[in-house]
Image (tube, rainbow, N blue to C red; front, side, top):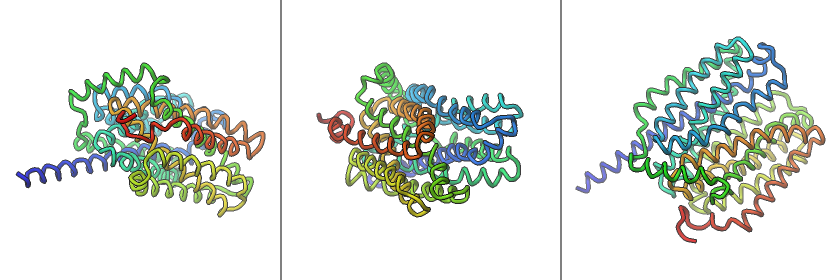
Length: 405
């Protein structure tokens, strides 16, 4: 009997590891696709008659679709299960990237971008909810951290792949990214089991509907607001840092590429291997508060940076802070709403997308007034958020999922 129990546990662990590995690769592919367009899309748009303003609108379109539809996909994963929603997102992702490679008019490019953003927004909340379903509370931060690391790796390899393949033709990177997703689909279909039983789906759907009807009144709203703040700050940083580095240290594409590759590697290390051990020792809320202070420190140090070493140090400190906040806040959202996790994470992604829509606009406008303004505002926001959490959100540091007071 003991040997049968041990064998059953071993099979369950093996299945979980296989599922996590498939999810890791899916999210890696999604972010490869997101990053692959960075070095080629400006040229692609110009070739189709676009300009800088149209490029900004094009980039915002993707975040807008995530803002509008991520909650829907999260609710759907609570209602019909995680697996079908993940498969929908993966298939849509593959098909739309193949379509990107086939467009010949600017309006077609926007149409495919809207479709891509709408369908790909299914993947992240369902995948994160899948991890939450298959991990214990002690392991959840590490599991979500691994998914974040997968996305970080995608953002490292995506631009490099796009730049290299773009030399062979501007459509080539899209065909490669889409083909990889379509090749992955049969493996996900075969080896990715559903994590919710029929009874579980019914119970989760009820909780999902309740959460959706009272977003602002929900106890999770502070975490949704944190996602908005974090992504707003990150988008301001991303929208202005290249210009800042070029102005302060005469950085060109080579130096910028090297710096962002190093930052991406740091994020992967923190989220992929360190965060699980840090959570076990300090707890998720402690990491969020530490991340806010580190982010504020990094943004303030950017004001005094003037060469590769100082810029890298400041940006690395900021990046470490952001890497601590993201997985920990997602973990708390699943722990404090142990039913309807897809809806919780979908809403969190939606709030994050709203930050990414507003951030570049505000950051760009402030940068025109003063190159230091975006980083001063970011520092102030991080410190203020830390103080609010420290003074008013004690409950998130106590027991999860409604246990305790």
